[in-house]
View 1 (cartoon, rainbow, N blue to C red):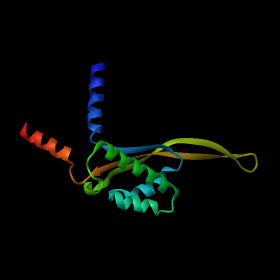
View 2 (cartoon, rainbow, N blue to C red):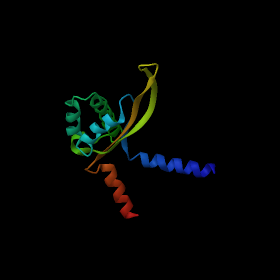
View 3 (cartoon, helix red, strand yellow):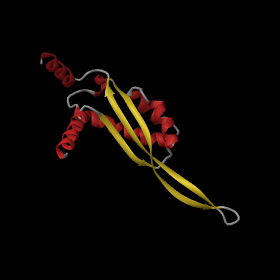
Length: 146
């Protein structure tokens, strides 16, 4: 049983080597507010998304701006020697999941109490290139030869 789990983990690691992503965990804004911003940039080019996030008045757009910069840096780390301008990066996938919820109590009239739910979220952002890199071209050539 341990060998199967180990093999699956190794396979998952190999698949993640070709993905360029960044994660933001336990962001202290509600998932609903973050999804509005995520929907605004989904599928857009990276340059346009950075511009939209920088000029957006919502507080969560600043956090997504930093997350997008982190995803771009992860792409650059895995693709050394490839220029960012030539790669035509875009946001291939972005999703917002709800995180943990802090429950607080707020006093109410006549000895009652109202519950306050302070929500948080987790954001995952995937970046991909529309132009294939030289590594991907070499892998495709070797696969066709084999």
